[in-house]
Image (cartoon, one colour):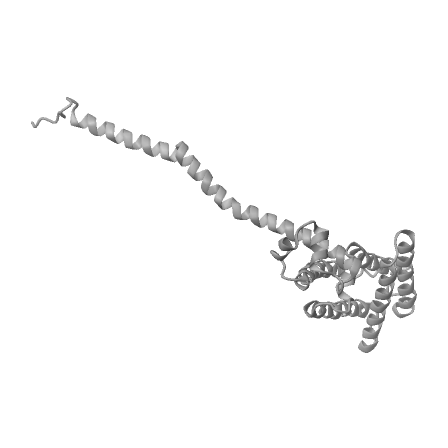
Amino acid sequence: MPDTTQKDGTPEATQKARASEARASEARASEAGTPEARASKVGASEKEQAPRRRQARGERRIAQLLEAAAQVFCTTGYTTASTNAIARAAGVSPGTLYQFFPNKEAIAIELGDRLMHEMREAYGEALAPVDPATPLEEAIGSAVDRFMAFNTDHPVFFALMHGPDVPGRMAEAHDQLHTTVIGRIEALLGSLMPGADPADVTRTARVCLGVYKAGLELVLAHQGAERAAYIQETKDVLIRYLEPLVGDRLGRT
């Protein structure tokens, strides 16, 4: 039988077993994470999180700039507003503003897009189908309240959409929204005015929206009790206009 004893006197099988155990121990240590391995993992994790932190900071900065722009547009109007005034209102340098927006038109478009999305949701809820048992006063009151709440919470929307120099893209989006709202009012009135000529329904829908817009302008020009009074006046005009057209299709209070 050959001699399997190593030069140091340790049997070869024992040496192999020790080497195997050492390799296994190294593997376990690697899996558990040596200080160096743990540091490497932490470094990689921090590198992955850094872009997310930068993105979050960027979103906060954009929101800050849009809020400042809304204040400036409401105060001076879109035409007179400047990027310097917006940066000043946001408490940042013009250079910081230009990192996110190339000009005031880009700011207005971004602000308008966000508000348009919120407005579609608000108007969709306000013009939802009405339960026939709902009194006319309640149905109109609820719709007007939702419309007014959006516009009083975001007065910049009216300032942008009705300004003389509104960016073309925003004007197009507003025109599309106007068409959509008229269509929703037509559908609502159509269910309450069966047998009416479609042209009459369309005309009635346009008058309703026109009355609301006229009331909104007065509402936005006042505060407190006067604002509340103009909101109620707008409701009263719509109720008196629609009562003879709707008849007893909706309940009475």
